[in-house]
Image (cartoon, rainbow, N blue to C red; front, side, top):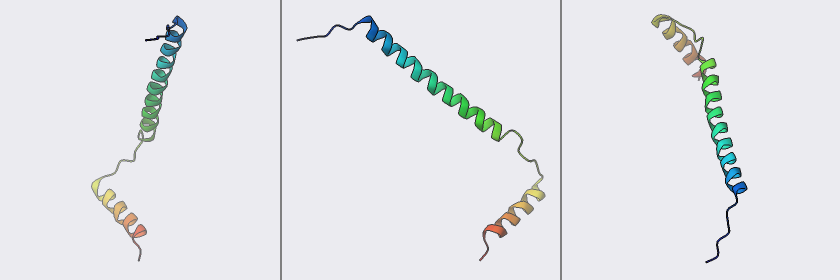
Length: 65
């Protein structure tokens, strides 16, 4: 059975690729979280009657026949 020796450079480059992928994936999750947090920060507040009026108006707008 022939085995090729693994050099220290191979191990270091594999570790570097692993940590690069790890940091990019964690960074992507944090960026996505912050983007969603920014979009939902200042949602309009309304009482039940205002919400029902707005829902009916939007329903009429999109359900015209």
